[in-house]
Length: 191
Length: 191
DNA sequence: TCGTTAAGCTACGGAGCCGTATCTAATTGG
DNA sequence: CCAATTAGATACGGCTCCGTAGCTTAACGA
Image (cartoon, chains in turn green, yellow, red, blue):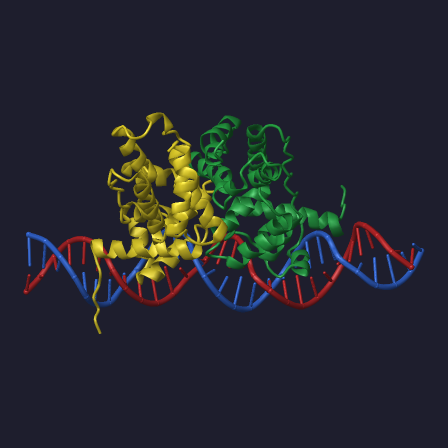
């Protein structure tokens, strides 16, 4: 047998992974120190030495979660760049971290501190969303009327991706992303 | 003292209300027979006599929940009718039933039977959404190109209302609904 | 009025999680 | 190689919910 006792960073990483998996499986309400410890194959005491509550543990886990790739506009094809940006979003939605983020935002009313910590410790430090990055790029280089970049238009793509995901219980495919860009996003940009 | 023992329908109504309130407060994971019974000021045994699980109780409660008002297009002002339809949506979002629906859809992966029951027993029997009703009306009377009514365009309004609600932690006001219609919905309809 | 139905109450053993304490032994740094 | 650190295991009393059972009594209907 290999006792192989983990320590320090390696142990913390395993605990973070376990926490995200637990949220995905049990929900925020079912996130317990016992559950995380069991899944990480460690002892509760190890968790309590580092975090006072499962929620603080979860926030740390989200902060360490692999950051999302930033869209890099090809600068010549707005339509293709927008579809690429939404593809980055749907890729991220398939990760464990996305499940945790969904749980936190949809239960915001129940755990407001958690939602706030999510924004201040995870979202804000990264700045910008998916399509907004692309749109700002094209606006900066003069190929798009900057007045078209509003709090509404910059959210159309993401909003429809989420809506379709909810309605269909399934993450949209490339064809659906293209339809979103063609039928909703580009018309709103007057292009 | 007033013993005033409730029976039959009146009792069931009280239990349904308690169930919706419990979901809003405790989440799907925290929905328990004990909690519902406590809030409804009745005994657990009363609940177990009627429902085997808290989830079946919840589905019944949603089925009995006040149906949403149907948009009645004025037929002369598409913009105003769309804003009115989205206002119906935001009104509904402030009700207890909406909190329960949000919980069920966002935890669909965890409780798929619940999401399916929600659609088959609550959504499908009512048919149609908010803006879609208005758009179909205008398309039927020839004032809107029917080809513009796609699974994407009919969801733009609702999608943005949900997205803004999530991002701001607050249900959009009339001014924001107007912006959604002007900046996203009408352009996508080529109007 | 009186019998039937069902609401309301109390209690039960079992299970899971809480947060803490105690002890062991593996790992690591000096 | 030894000593400090800390992972890991076990156990604890306390709490809440589970689902069921037994009983009293209010409400209803014939």
